Length: 331
Ligand SMILES: NC(=O)c1ccc[n+]([C@@H]2O[C@H](COP(=O)([O-])OP(=O)(O)OC[C@H]3O[C@@H](n4cnc5c(N)ncnc54)[C@H](OP(=O)(O)O)[C@@H]3O)[C@@H](O)[C@H]2O)c1
Image (cartoon, rainbow, N blue to C red; front, side, top):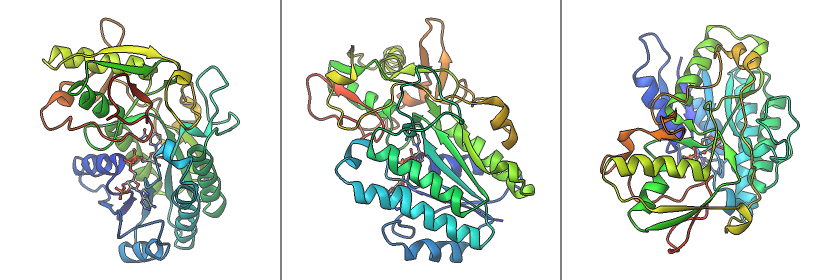
C-alpha cells in the first residue's frame, strides 16, 4: 500500500515524508522518489518507477517550478509540467492507481479581483501557469482517478521558498523592495502534506468518483508578498536578527519576467469537503500563523534557528526585489 511521491527533493515531498513519519499506525508508507530515479526528462524512468514501487497511490509533486525561467525554457517546463504528468497519469490509469496531482494558482490571471474557486475559468498568463494547467487537464483526461490539488505560496523550513529567501536576504542587505500588489494564500507545506495524506487515506479506503476533479487546498488568510516579508522580519527582529527596511513596490517596478497573478485562490468548502477536508488549511499551524496582535501574519521561531534559514535560495514562485544587491533572485 505504498504512496509514491514524486519530486522527492522538493519541499512538498519532504513535508509529506515528515508528515507520514508522524502518521498513525496502519497508514500507508510514503516513498519519496526524485531525480535521477524519476525524471520527466527521461520518460522511461516514469514507468520504471511505478513498476518498481507498485504504489497504491501516487502523489505527483514534481514540477518545473522556476516561474521566470520557464518563460525562456519552455520545452523543459512543458516536459515536466504537462507531458510528464500526462504519461504518469496514463501509467497510473493502466494500473488503476489514483493520482493526486499538485497544481498552482498560476492557472489564473488574477483579474477576478477576489479569491478564486475551483469553478472559475482559468487563464494562465505565463509559461509556468500554462504548462501546469495543461498538465492538470491531461492528467484528468487520461486517468479517471485523478484529483488535482491546487495550492499557493508554499513555505517550509526546507527548500526554496519566500520565507527562507527573506531570511537569507536579511543577512546580506539593509533594504529590500518587495512587491505589494500581488496577493496570495501562504500555505504551510506541513499543512498541505497533512491534507494530502488525509486525501490519500480516504482514496485508499475506497475510490469514489466524486474524488476526481480539481480542488483548491491553500492556507486560509491572504496577504501580499510585502506583507509576508514584513511578517518574517517582525519575527526576525524579535529573535535578534537584523531587520531590513522593506519598501513596497508594484510588480511593474520589479524585474519579474513572467506575468504574475495578483490575487489569492481560495477554498470552496463544499468541494474540498468531498475529500474529507473541512475547509481551508489551517493558517495557524506550523509556519504561517495567521494574524498576530498587530494584524500581520507571524512566522514561527523555528525559521529563525541558525542553519534552518540557510542562505537565500532561488525561489521559484516569489518576486522579491532587492534594492541594493543583485545577489537575490527575482522570483
Ligand atoms: N512552491 C510553491 O510556492 C508552489 C505554489 C503552488 C503550487 N506549487 C506546486 O506544488 C508542487 C510541489 O512544489 P514544491 O514547492 O515542492 O517545488 P520544489 O521545491 O521546486 O520541488 C519540485 C521538485 O520537482 C522536481 N523536478 C523538477 N523538474 C523535474 C523533472 N523534469 N522531472 C522530475 N522531477 C523534476 C525537482 O527535482 P530536483 O530536486 O532534482 O530539482 C524538485 O524535487 C508543484 O507541482 C508546484 O507546481 C508550488
